[in-house]
Image (cartoon, rainbow, N blue to C red; front, side):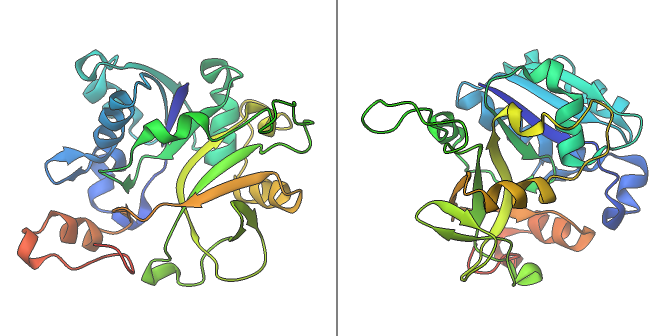
Length: 244
């Protein structure tokens, strides 16, 4: 399995830090955000990693190189302007190939997430070994998290590991997902395309599975959030509801 780390965004809410440093290279607890992901992916045996870049992308490539220092093989998908999540995947398709892949945002902090679990969440056969029809199998699998205070309404509901657009309770998409490449067939390389509308379309078709991850998870969106994470342990305040 290959992985993709999204690292093309401008990080407007992190300015002025991101005026001179790409957001994925900002350090949390002594290590750049993106390096936490790379090391955890390699630990799970996922060593072929695609990183999309745009804003200050040359700094990311200079810092990470070919990935050999981490035991990884890094490949870069360069975007002149950030193409959003779905557009970034379509642009990187020639690097990712056609098999299911895991994708994670470069600006979340999930130090204890075990990427070993992502390898077998998409199934092509039922428990009796019969192939699923293409329109009945999950096209992607999303990891949800308890709603943080800043997103109390959540994103999606869930019934027996199948996500729903309606219903309650709702959970927040944790920006970690496993996808089949066919999901992006309608998007051409270079197109600007968001992931949200595509997810909702397939959720309506009941083709999106998911589960709740309750380990440490932070979306590092502001300078204040970064400062709290980097504060001495005794003075840290929780940034996400129900999580430490």
